[in-house]
Every structure is written in C-alpha cells, then in structure tokens.
Length: 147
Image (cartoon, rainbow, N blue to C red; front, top):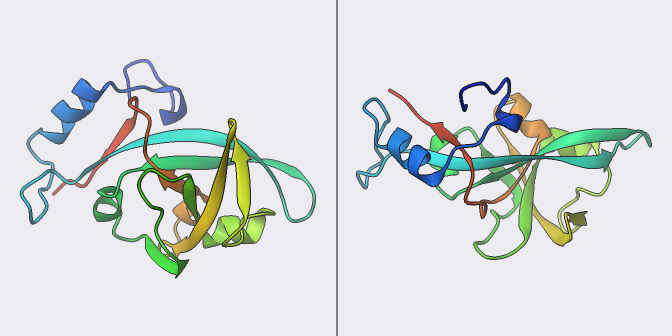
C-alpha cells in the first residue's frame, strides 16, 4: 500500500513502483524466471443480495499471472476470463450471496457490460466472496508470492 493509505482501496501504485516491487529480492520467480507478481485493481460494486437487500462487493482485476500468485484459485465451472473481453469469474460464495452472478449472466459496471464466464473456489477463503476480471487499469495494487 502507498504510504498514508489505511486500506488497499484508497491506495495507488504506479507501474514503475509495481515493477520495482516485482524486481525486489524475496519475490519468488516462476519457472520462466519472471517474478510471480500480479498487479491488481480493486473496485467496490453495488450488488443485490439474494434476500433482496443492497450490498457492496469487491470487484478485483488481475492478470493471468494472478493465478500463479494465488494458486488456491481453482475454476469449478465455466472458464477463465479472456484477454480483451469484458468477462469475469465469480467466487462460489459471491454466487451464493448475490443475484445475477450465474455463469452466462451479465453485470453492468461503470458503463460496461461484463459476462460471468466462470465460478471459482479458493479453499474456503474470503476470496470466494469476490468477483474477478481481466486487469486493464494501469494503476494497480501488486500482490506477490514471497519465499
């Protein structure tokens, strides 16, 4: 997180800062020798709970490398989102909690229509209550796998 930020939601890292972090000592490398780092954005989206109440839900953007950084994410139905397409995957808990997140459903967010193309599990972690999409924003949070 950026200095002075109390949560990742109000934090920003530039591309240069994220690249410097990824190149830091202690960040595990993948089999291709590249750092296991995933620049990620975080938005909060308004959702309707299945019981009819309103709620806010996290909507995270991650790169394909995000699956190496977060190996606990396993697709259980459908497929992973494709590059350059407004597709998203949803955690099984999010699908259970909120309306309109079945595979094939469409979600409107900030002027774009996103298609739910897959469901994932992550070993029962809180990540399962989230939705994920292909990272496109140049300002991001960086997750790294450290060893």
